[in-house]
Length: 486
Image (cartoon, rainbow, N blue to C red; front, side, top):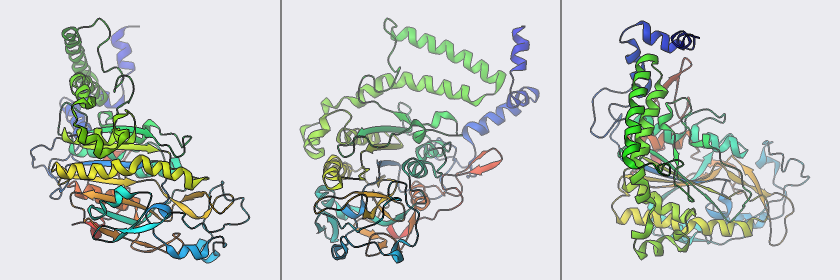
């Protein structure tokens, strides 16, 4: 077949319109790549995303999201309920459960006995916030963090719940939270992506739920905004290094030639993904020098590893990833997300959760302290928490020294620290069984709206038109949780 005719037959509708009206294709491409996002048009120094101006004065430049995958038990770590001891072993009252649907893992149980926590709680900091003995280091920064005990979600299974936390929808396919920020605000450092992901495996449940690349994907946004996962073994980013025998100058000539071809293809077809490829090739070239420097912890003083704990020197651990998170925000990365697996304690919770808390306690607190002493906490937001909580009743048998907990979306706990956050505060209250919220509920959409607010974004105005609808991270709801803001 004639190659010109073949290209015409394969032309998309967008490409056809781009070629049949001079100037329309360029305008459409510009709209797709940078979008107005319903924002003002006044240019702001350092803002190179879809937004041309902040909607409100920002308090935060960057975010570190410490996502605890598998759902930490709020009952055993944050939500102090001493009265539960007197209910231990009794059937959870029907008036408390109120016919709530439960997962298939406990639906077959004939009894739902209450399991009070096996761990002691003590007041921490000047605020006197009660926290579990499992997290003494986080307790040491109690006056720096705002704890929300009244988080809630509709999801009761891991994948929909994690997807919902990350994208604002239980169904796959929407852009992740980091991608929204990359799209809206752009990057502060041309040598790094705006959105970086680090993953670690905890010592609690080593067979915990898997994590999928779509959780940091860009969905229907241009793919240049997807998260870049840094690996702990081998090359930090796949295909980052030049192939064996290819010198840097040859690589540069090849990229220049490829760029010319891609720019020609953009003019011919108006496909925004071609522009994404151009940008990603150039980013990869710059990352060849920036990423090895980032990953090299040999220049960190001994005090760093003393602060973050003994695991901080082991690549791939949560502690080492916390150190990298600090180094990334130092370099201007907009959104850093740590996923830590292992929190799914359906059985053997007292033993498993000890190891899991040990994984994250010292380094999470160290990250707060480290950023503060470097002056970075003044414009960095830290978020800590999982996809939902755990049940007050036990899964399986309740014994003198052992119990497990099923999934629970009606209430759970997260905490925040950093710019714009009122440290030493506790928001929300649950009932005597840590089962239902009785005061100040905060939905997942509310937390995402609050994060965007601190970044200078009105969550209702950062939108992207797709398939005839304006989508946003908070879907059609969400409110800013002003009670925890300073």
